[in-house]
Length: 506
Image (cartoon, rainbow, N blue to C red; front, side, top):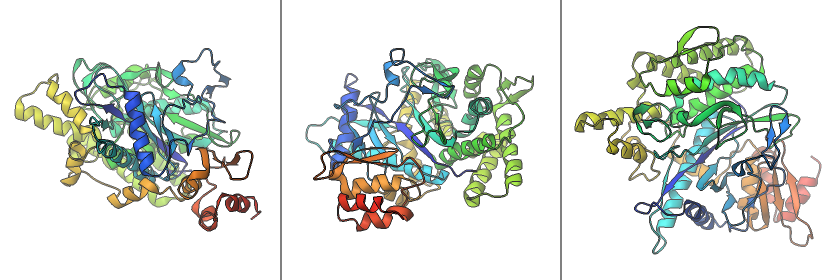
């Protein structure tokens, strides 16, 4: 693999009711999801999530956490029938997670597709808000694509990458920690305030950096680790490992979003191939993560275990140069255009950041937000602890185009866009063609009333005339594509015909 691999993004949206700080976010999140599902013809008792094979307490380090020892937030395999939890026609999951609406994108294979279906989630969030606002007497509900509320709470944007099971987990940890500590200079979302509760005056590169406490661990909401060890592949377990990444920020700009997943996929490819032989381990990586984040001038340094002192930008250059050498040695890239796009943008961005940080405005979230905030500061003489800057920070992430500042910049041509509005609109209702998401989403579209539940690795049908539910496993992520089952899905008059066709040997 180079940049091509099975991957996907998860976004928990911030939620609020203006003027009502006591509003119940869990109830409101359920409303947000239910109103959208209903508009798509998906009833709350249909196309729900299948928890049968989920195992969130299996640790990649080789053990299983006892359920009695686990924090309740880790028990993500327990269904709460009172909470909205649906599968959409684009193959995504849309549900309530820790009192936030969460959109988990369908599986894709390329970084640009990851951006498309991630932005489709933003469009779905916007449509949900608009649908809810159309209800008589409904108080206005706002959603925000960010990771911190400025009052001490953080919520996640997670990435998922499928890897070969044979890759040694200690190698993953050793080579990914320096990369993740410094990756924020490219894909940080920017935040007003220092510290988990934003009491410190200033601006930092990452929304999430201050909320991490340890290097490696199974948790996602407590003692957040740089490397998450959840070993839940949602695929053939002895063949695949799913790397669950919780350290990323929510990106609204295409270049940052593409580089987040594209560079990570390249680094994983180098780890899988054993190409990274040097050890770039950083001393005290959690502290280093925050040191890098707290300095938007990019001059702050971290110490490597071997004694070298480098900036976050320097460390990113190490990975980029290693990727160049690796790609030259491989010479068998299945997606050369996609890889070239990531490599070209990665080098361009690192070069720009080294010469003039502000030259990345319109490309990187944290730089673009900083430029906007500096404009307010210069115009009104605002200090970094002024509450008006914190309000601008929140408004930046508002999903509504008439309110969200990113939308205004995009409308004025001040952002570098890689995908088109037409692609985003299509991805709201259509799944990717080259993964099992095609089968999942198409089944919901074609046979919604018979889809009892679904998950990443199965679709469960309630077939008329059958006493038991019928489960179709899809443990291979690149099975169930449009090329493989598209014709069968379209020609099957009903679920019975579909299941008969699936059972027929090729």
